[in-house]
Length: 142
Image (cartoon, rainbow, N blue to C red):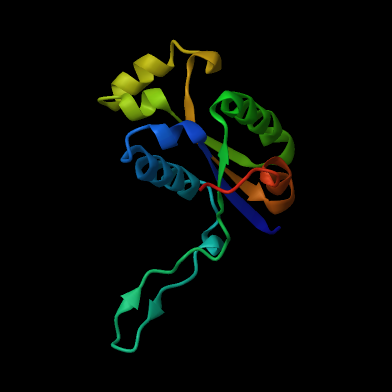
């Protein structure tokens, strides 16, 4: 199986505080790391001075965008496809980013439906074909 990984960001982020973007991408990357196979990261490489450098991803990971009004529907479509296509879909919502603690996040999220949330970012990984089918027509983040 060839792996596909995409990160999809809400266009609304362009209007928000600049610190949010790297925070969201970092969190989604950490979430991907909980599920992705080890072969997606290459082995350490020793440089000419003998220092080992961590391996980097050997799977392309485009960062794409979706208009704010379409983000929740896109996320729902990805989640609907998750079990059938054996892919992993991770989300990062505004209440997560605004939470003061994990308990605060849990309390806020547990009383909200998807319609009540602002989905800021999504990471999708798994077999390249279904992942690309979901994300292939989305524009790159600019």
